[in-house]
Length: 95
Image (cartoon, rainbow, N blue to C red; front, side, top):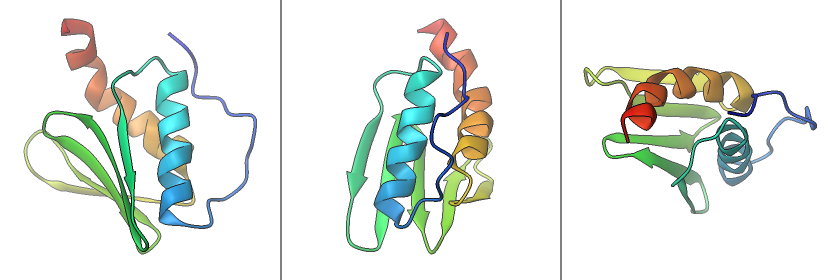
């Protein structure tokens, strides 16, 4: 499995760029079957059934496995990837 270290430390300028960076971090960590989507003011990344990350208004948003809302600054896609990698890892190992 790869690491979550990144070459480029730039801050994303748009939701689409933030989701793209998040996608790159998660893919580098070994996650597969990631499905991004972009619109003008919102972007999303489907990670697995029941886990989709939305980026809007400078914030990543998703729900944990208990349905509780989780937020993380879009300016920190690497940190969001670390949090999401911990959530998705057990299911990825079982697949």
